[in-house]
Length: 115
Length: 114
Image 1 (cartoon, each protein chain N blue to C red):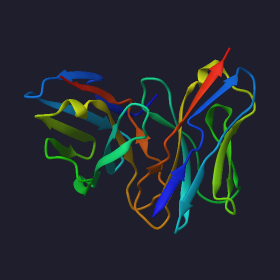
Image 2 (cartoon, rainbow over the protein chains, first blue to last red):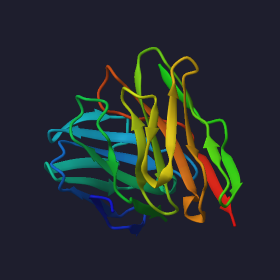
Image 3 (tube, rainbow over the protein chains, first blue to last red):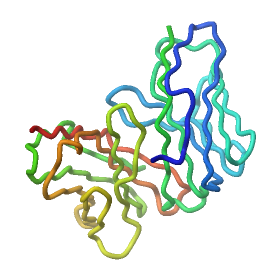
Image 4 (cartoon, rainbow over the protein chains, first blue to last red):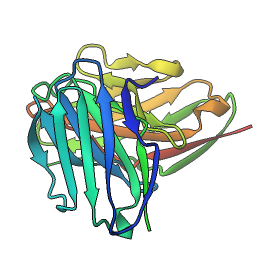
């Protein structure tokens, strides 16, 4: 069982809607990640938070807005999305970013459909 | 720059047969190596990883992988597959000198045939 919990599992939203994806981990990890995965493709890194500060933004459009309220929680706020943004959004966490051998643990993902 | 190549996009294999999923990487610096599995409609789960030491790494669900530095490979093997092993398998690297970030291959779809 994954220890990274994502809600909702499925989300359908219109292009004018505002919604949020939520992620929670209780492993004491200090690095949290958002990945986007299209069908039959590997995950692509979107954002990384380290010690609750944004450390990487992989040139993601501003219609995606991440937020890290505390060390256990990570949100992804969605606004004015396009149909091509439909994908599986994966949250992940690791102990910290400094050591690149740390395992990155993934949640089960949130399936997003933009109509 | 680094890259990860999984040459086989699909591998069909009969139940109880052995399987090898190939992974080659290219990097100007030393790397750590990972195999993740993604079952249908789920997230990614770590199968195994190589950090240092013995080049033969054993993971969960009976999988193992061998690191070959001279061939820059990290192939995944299982001696006898089950129907439940049907999934997408991703090889990934992270740079030893960098922060914790994964660079993924394109994935191999393993289909176990009854």
